[in-house]
Length: 200
Image (cartoon, rainbow, N blue to C red; front, side, top):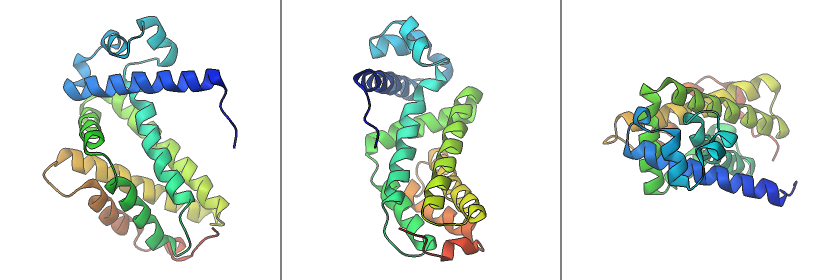
């Protein structure tokens, strides 16, 4: 595993601080009402520094979304043996079910913004696409065939994305982990590649 340099760690820390500030402001106000200047002020940096890290205000939330995807990928990479059809929904349920309530509140606000802000949706879809590609690599490393890895990665990623979007739209409905497991079951019906165990 490659160790980050001090400069890389500082950059990552600054990115996280900006992302937290942006997410908080987007949660407090609509995305359209928040400016890069406000995000910079909340993060304690200059506007010039903000634009060194992110080209648009919407891009500032990418580190938060990416961190969630990375946690799910890492959990799946470390999952034990057993058919993927049962292993994947267990990991999905565990990851989404373990979310901090405050983090879920922030995620709900961000996802509501996704529905009304095209640039924010671009970021959301880009993070999902990156997550799908990374999951495909993990599956291939575990011995899953190329086509099967594409299908399974797409189904798994879409199950999480659809569940989070549906939960944000109907906050009084089921929790996102429950929705995601149901969506995964619906999308994965007939996907034969899920019935193999794969190499641990």
